[in-house]
Length: 217
Image 1 (cartoon, rainbow, N blue to C red):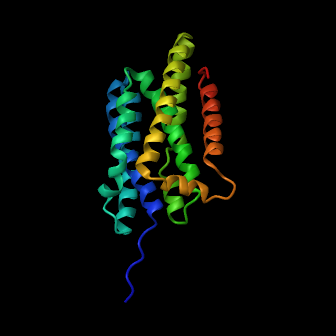
Image 2 (cartoon, helix red, strand yellow):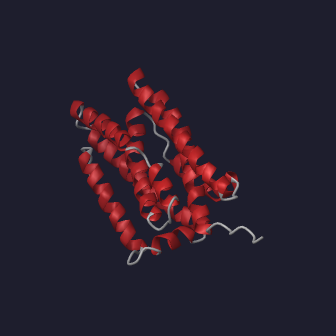
Image 3 (cartoon, helix red, strand yellow):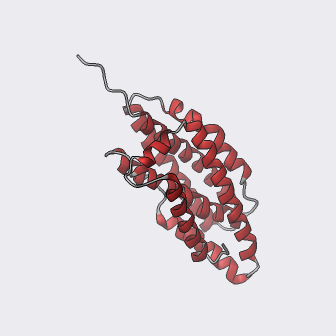
């Protein structure tokens, strides 16, 4: 009887990154829900948090099926991802929804690009746990409504969004160092794709999202 085939290290690294990201997202959204100005908004963020923990379970189950303990796969990312969230703790409701809108979207764009280098069923699994567009629409609507009431809010949230992007890029560098190059290898599995081109696309998508929410680039 032949020994079982070892899972692709790049796949394990990516699933570990996604799994820990989902755990942190659950913690963050549950905490941010307490900043909500009313029960409707609190319930909306609480529902988002519940979705994140469900997504974590799906990724963790896949890692277990591959013979990899989920906590082992997540361990390299604890430091860099926690550092990002610790350095971007929102002070109020609008900063919380801006972080959900800007930070989560950049992460999703990054993971969507990397997932295209995976074989099925793992490609679809990663795509399926990305954030539902209705959450981004909810956050953007909150920001636009606040800006309509007080146009000065746009400058404050724009500065906050730029800080989030800067921290996210720093986080990406820390993740790459922790990852030992496996995520870069996944990106380059796609013919004609390189890391600089990826970051140009991420930047362009971020710029479009800022404009859509009424923020300054």
